Length: 527
Image 1: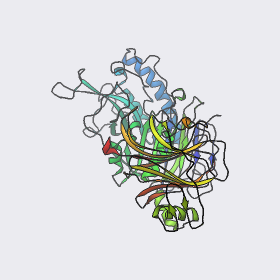
Image 2 (image 1 turned 120 degrees about the vertical axis):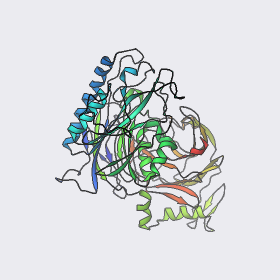
Image 3 (image 1 turned 30 degrees about the horizontal axis):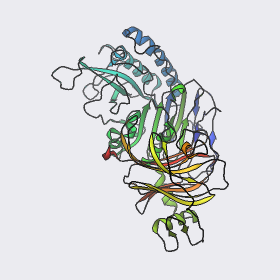
Image 4 (image 1 turned 45 degrees about the vertical axis):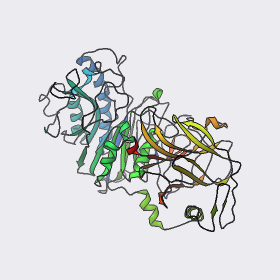
């Protein structure tokens, strides 16, 4: 089955998914019926690019040969800019590594690098001033695209900066090499640049000595923050940028390898938008053989995304989104409605005398009883971490599982049982594979089979439907809500928030089988 989707999900709307198939680009339905866009909104685009790669990235080459390859990718970029311009796009984002590719050494990537002057020191329009600096051909083309398309443009490229022996951080070869995002205004001016801080096994690049905290302003939507791929899991620069209350939008070039059940590209993109109440414009590279796909334009209440493990083509997503996004929590709390399920959750959490809780059972005023004495605790590897889990066997129930300082709880009902194994898992510790960072996770997952040892395996299809509350006594306020359903589809949580020092996620009325529902907490100070 081909997972090829661009889906819009609205909180509070019907649970039907609008699924749009095919075409070289996709436009959010109903967005472009008017001649002029509404001032409270802007039109954004992200392009998931199948980059043309060097056949041998380890081989030494010339600048001319490097430019020949990069221009092939830039030709595709320009085509997409013009497609976007026809839809009155105001900002477009391209992925990480899309122009030059990846798997280089420090030496072999050198011919692919542009010289990058500091935008803080030099005001420069590369398209109109092409001879001002040498080795800036890529920057020149990107600048000219922004002018031609009359839009802000964000792209990623490799850059170089000479340094001297008097600089204690200067590499032995006398230059810094950076993984760099550049931002151009609609008149082609180089607005700013961000040099990636949290490199992911990128031997060709240096980590900047000082973290770039880059915020750029636009006339159509105010302030945008910028970071790249692996940065999204770390405090600097990501959280520090979001702390600026005027940042309502983020541009996010990535070369993200999907890892289920917790860190698929579209999962973390949407979770970031929901958690912080902002818009995320995420452009991922497209190489399905490497597990790299998944891009989107995400708001706190709605997502437009693309994930395709079969089609080898690139893909353009276009959507009109709000200049001032409305957060999920504020919207739900404003309703003031408490249904029986949520009332039961609140009573359990409060230790209500009419809702007694112990290790064996729960009694609520409705005299519902769930026996837990047959639920074994087991251990299984998930995302290279050793989770503690309990199976979910009944049509309804309340269960919990703990590890170290974190206890996770699940209150659930199922309209019918499926022939699948689900489990509630907890992890509280330092993740040490493919990066080192401290996490606290409560996860409701579908297992790969019927054996306990299959819980945590990568799966993308499921039929089990749940109405549930998932919560935990997290030690951090930085918690990402993950909600993924069958066929790599996204759904927005019904409600999120803190109650009695516990953070909860609530969802009912799933439109397809649940793959993962999780609260992914980051404790940056313990990294």
